[in-house]
Amino acid sequence: MKIPALDLKKQIAPIRGELDSAIKEVIDHTGFILGERVERFERHVAQYCNVKYAVGVSNGTDALSLALLALGIKSGEGVICPAFTYYATAGAAAAIGAVPVFADIDKDTYNISAGSVRKILAGKNKVKIKAVIPVHLYGQCADMRGILKLAREYKLKVVEDAAQSFGAEFKGKKSGTLGDCGAVSFYPGKNLGAFGDAGCILTNNKGLAEKLRILRNQGNKSSYIHLFLGRNNRLDSLQAVVLDVKLKYLDVWNKKRMETAGFYNRKLAGLPLKTPFVADYTTHIYHQYVLRVQGQSKGLLEHLRRKGIDSRVFYPIPLHLQECFKYLGYKKGDLPESERAARQVLTLPIYPELSRQEKDYIIQSVKEYVNG
Ligand SMILES: Cc1ncc(COP(=O)(O)O)c(C=O)c1O
Image (tube, rainbow, N blue to C red; front, side, top):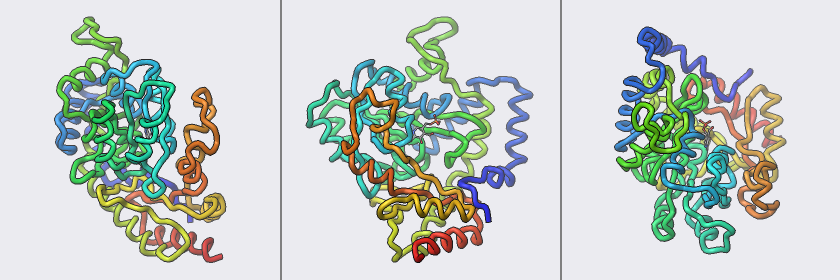
């Protein structure tokens, strides 16, 4: 059997008619960038997230950079990021000249905690820290309560990286709506994915939303009147209409992921493997279903791949040890929980269209390895 990490053909097939007519309408209309279709999608996202404003942008990385820029983060200022996340979290901060300051993660949730952020703030830092980016990794929210409290105490801006958690809730509030801004990615492989790159920024702050709309469009206040040093970070309407069609199905898809996670948890109970820990303050939309093994994930990973199961490691090298961040001066051993997680995690496919037969095969293959 061959089981990919994600099968978008299976997701698209049942809604193909709707998608085709939405795309055709854009071609007939020819308003390809921003405009009414993007605005309609932004309204629907805002409604879905119960947030005042959603600003469509080019991708999740730009969403993070723009949010930091709009919040006034300047070159040389420190931005706390988890060491265990996708490159873009810290890359987006570095791209605007800010300095990533890496926090270690909680060993159970894989997210940064108030404790790890406080450790940095209370210590000696080479730069003045002005912001924190909690990442809601794999689809469950970081402990925002403690992080927001610290942010108030130290006057930090909070940009949630909700790239992997669109639809997850922290104590009943949608991820990305708790900090000053939330950055969302609609990369095709995300739970809500476009047919290309796309993203958005969530905020309840009117002034900030207005600034973000100007910044994403070359700093244009109105045609050829440039108020800020903006960028071209606009969302195009083909992506907006695709996302608008898919948004209606997101909760059903996320529910299926949750059911599959429950199934895997039950079937793997009692084995020497750590199944995902879900904290009581958050829901989990299982962008990834992540297992943790004692020692190293390599053996199980290779076994699953031999069996045709596209298991992955997100992420094999923590950011503080990446070549591109060498200039920041971190060394091995500095952030032990991130380093350990990088050695021990691996994913099982969890996309909504997986059949019962495929899930059984995945479990059987894991057990085969673990039980020798
Ligand atoms: C945690 C995290 N942050 C940021 C991004 C960047 O999003 P994008 O690929 O849309 O630029 C991604 C996804 O790729 C991500 O997983």
